[in-house]
Amino acid sequence: MFRSVLLHMGHAAMSQHLNLATLASLPPAIAVPTYAREMLRPGILHIGVGNFHRAHQAIYLDDLFNTGKDLDWAILGAGLRPGDAAMRRALEPQDWLTTVVELEPGANAARVCGSMTGFIPVGDTGRAIVDALDDRAIRIVSLTITEGGYCIDPATGAFNPEHPEIRYDVAHLDAPKGVFGVILAALKRRRDSGAAPFTVMSCDNIPGNGHVTMDAVAGLAELVDSRLAAYVRETVAFPNSMVDRITPATTDRERTMLAERFGIQDNWPVFCEPFRQWVLEDSFPTGRPALVDVGVTFTPEVAAFELMKIRILNGGHAAIAYPAGLLGIHFVHDAMADPLVRGFLDKLETEEIIPCVPPVPGVDLGEYYKLIARRFTNPDVGDTVARLCLDGSNRQPKFILPSTRDRLRTGADVTGLALESALWCRYCAGTDDVGAPINLQDENAERLMAAARAARNDPAAFLELQEIFGDVAHAPAFRSSFSKAVQTLWRDGTRATLQMYLNNRLV
Image 1 (spheres, rainbow, N blue to C red):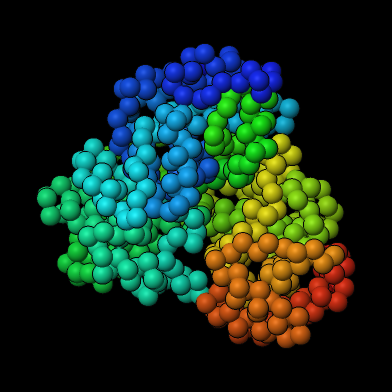
Image 2: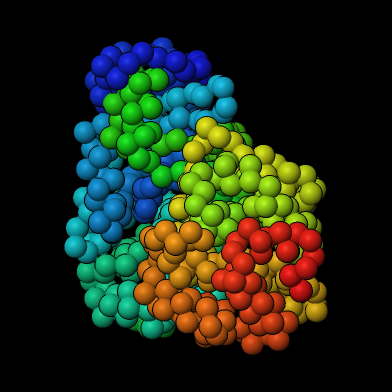
């Protein structure tokens, strides 16, 4: 295995640029690959090389390669967005190496991950990715394209054939610009040449992410050629997965910390919590790396694990995000130290979210929540409230509203969940409780802000965002609780509203 020692290095002036030439001379506190990097061969093409992927899938493979196994399953990076091009520019001079720092309080540790061997140039179209997928050695295409990247109708959770990206690729499958157009064009080439299809593995936080990915690829195919759609449904594997690791965004703070504490200059390092989990459905017809040897759980019960994680962890993040944002709290661990924010999270989870999470094999949901809460309080992670507030129009329909919908079906109370939605509404108005501006980072920011400001006088105006709320918006119990919460937030402020909820007076 790799060598690993706890950190504490000298000053930035002593730091070295990360690349293959300097790998052997890095400070001894840094864990480095023990395998011969030149022996690696790509077997996985990954689309969306962000922080989470490099802290998760890439690390599991790095662990596996350090055992000497499966060196033909290295990662070839790919992307279609400007952010992907920026990542490629950052990693190329580092020979695709990444420094990953695990933030255990009082015992931070760093390692260099070498499981990615290249990154396809990012162009105006995905032709270069389609060409790369002609290589029969690529047997898995994996994805981290965010929850908003799957061309889903937020209100129904179903594939949206009218999504602009889908419509473009239907007309331009020879030069697609979207992820699913690229995948479909490559699968079509493989079918036409008689080659076996690759497996498509989503690693995003979506319930049934394998099914959702198949619906997107097959749905696009149906718009192109029904025979191609049948080929996708009958021959291509889309395993479901659950992935978990808290991984904040990288800023100059992290780059400076890496240089000062570890003596490494990395253009885009990754800082993350020590905890990680990966649960996978074992559906890989053309093979897979022996990930079970490095801690990946293979089970047909992935859906149960994924639902648990999305409702309790991702839903919990949403519950923290908006009250903390309105109170001007910057870091997640500081939000957890605030009695009202923590009290809201605990009450919401135990009374409304966890009771509608189905049983998970071998897991005590109460103990799982305690683990989640401990992870949220890790001060070294430095996760920001602003990151949790990102992209609410895509996250709320996946992380919060399904719990609301489940409780409404059984006539159960939704006071806390309605308050969470009201806090999001109030946040979307664009100012916090003291009037400071909020930078609303959401692809639908303009519409959200207009609806949220109208909701100050007419709370139902926010519920008219039908593509987000769907049938939940029409449930009398939800509308009533939501309206009261919005009015109370504007009249009394976030702290008073949270206190009323904790005292069971927000009814």
